[in-house]
Length: 318
Length: 266
Ligand SMILES: Cc1cc2nc3c(=O)[nH]c(=O)nc-3n(C[C@H](O)[C@H](O)[C@H](O)COP(=O)(O)OP(=O)(O)OC[C@H]3O[C@@H](n4cnc5c(N)ncnc54)[C@H](O)[C@@H]3O)c2cc1C
Ligand SMILES: Nc1ncnc2c1ncn2[C@@H]1O[C@H](COP(=O)(O)O)[C@@H](O)[C@H]1O
Image (cartoon, rainbow over all chains, first blue to last red):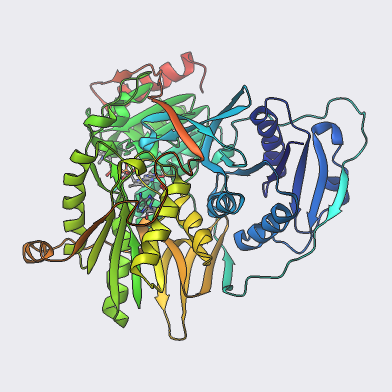
């Protein structure tokens, strides 16, 4: 019996992970156990078994946004069922729990997974390494913990109506690890749309001299009907876009129709999060900046002169 | 407080040559201390400065060839010692070259046990060359200690616990964790100090200990490899590479908009 345990805080991502599980096992999967952390609505409990989900594991006491509580639920199920595969999303929660779970299972683990291949009973994982300069093929032993990048697999679909609803299993709370206590918790401010979902993203980099100047990026985004994102230093060091995520290997990955990178040098750690953009436009005053070679259209110009002109042209000003 | 800082000698990805569709020239690229691990060292040293104790850096060599990497490792160790670490423990063994994260964690656990006890292990959030973020969590499990990743701040109180400030998903948290514990840090936690010439000279006198796997009583080649890297190729980026240079910003803007309209992007 080959079984996979799947968890993501996001329902759509769960369906992607179910597809990934099926690819990982070369179709030889006997069943997926889907962990639902937190109160589960009626609708989620009626997930059809034809999506591949055999059991819905409900941990009502668990909080899907709290990595420690997710870890506790996963461990409780793993201790009981010892699944062959554990599939997670490669975000901070997934990366937090992946190592410990792999060591617990005594198996392999890969994070930032972009592709899977299964042949002759062995699993090969593709992941981005060397700051985005390489895609490594890694052969992973089972049991395996795989943290998958969002959007890499098509969501699983119910095939036909046979089989009815998946079985629902309630998971008892094994009790908290009292050595770790969350003493304060507050939601981060979000500045607008989720970048992962945006069709057009204007990225601001260190080429912007002052926080106020980001106004230009926002105006450009508005003219293009898009969202504003930033490189890591602008968010993490300078806090110019408080609470938002940066784009890159340690931040979020975007896959918009159009990315306009303004005052961004294009270091691999940044580009690794933007490689899936369909069209990349770079605005940089340095013709030798790496972003110039990594873009479809590069405008070599001072952003302070070029952006106002571009915004005007886009708005139809003649 | 006795603190261990985990330091990986990562491939310097800046200096790595990569042709699309081919394997990057890994053997030709130098290694250096993975950037975020310098933040871990800085935090360890500043904790010792605040509350006393000691700082020991641990590193398992993951890249070969060993002869060349040993030279680089000695340089790296010198830098870490110059920043204020008291001693450096290097696990160097052909059998550990190319080891997966499980094996690396087991080797680190054995070295920590051999040279401990420690109250706190500080690691980086992820390494520059692999960014797996797996080693610290595996190590915590191996030691049976709690694990708190992504620290943007660490506050050492009394009473055998520390407070960690971090961001995960849509939340900011303050997590109190009992010691001993494993904590990983982000690049934002501090600014690693640049050692003075004097400190660099003095670092040469601090202890650097080199251990083999058999010194640690660990099994030899092949053992505990849950992941084997079969190949690495550079991704093909197919971009059009049109460079727009124009007389005036206005002209450049018009040309760009025209191109994007023609390509059907806007
Ligand atoms: C382990 C690790 C993980 C990391 N993860 C990430 C990550 O996820 N995301 C990320 O973004 N970074 C990440 N980084 C940092 C990354 O290496 C770079 O430091 C960062 O991406 C650089 O940001 P930048 O392009 O905004 O700034 P810079 O590199 O300083 O580039 C600024 C650019 O603006 C141009 N410029 C300046 N003035 C103007 C002007 N007036 N008009 C036009 N152009 C101008 C300059 O020519 C330059 O090219 C990571 C680093 C490490 C070590
Ligand atoms: N070979 C190693 N030797 C010492 N520490 C390591 C090693 N590999 C990883 N680490 C530590 O674990 C962190 C995360 O590494 P990784 O799992 O490779 O992303 C690094 O920032 C280091 O602190």
